Length: 178
Image (cartoon, rainbow, N blue to C red; front, side, top):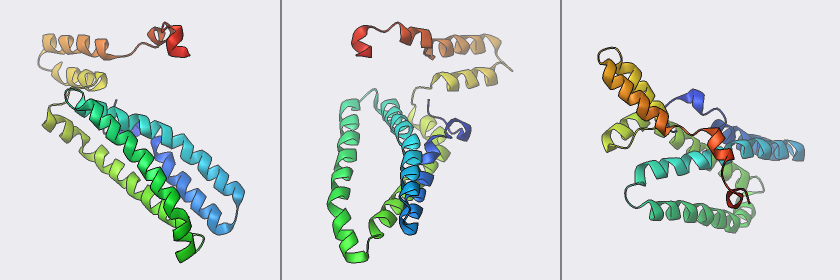
């Protein structure tokens, strides 16, 4: 799930460049470039939301998960409402490019915060005693295999139990697929 492994997050990095393309398209007056930027932005936004919700579940699964998820959802909708209410005043006071510039700055800030999380995630997980994910358990098993084979085998069993088999997803009922 969430690890400080940049190779695992290539699509998440699309939301900031996408927003930058939207800003560039606005500055150049190119609707096509703006639409392409929104497309690129969309490629990264949904996976980012999934990862952020996974982080919330990971850290709050033993206490306060419901309220944490609710705060995350309400914050997202609240920010959308605030942005809709501030777009026109920004454009009226600072010019028609101001909402796009503000949006790009806020997206860049969000991107930096996500990079900071990636850098401190291993430390944060270790310090909070959060349950390790399958890949993390597997990596720990590889490390311990050098000096304790039986412990490594036990960790490998735990890791196998935590992986999701795609064949199991296909077996979900009609209610899930509807």
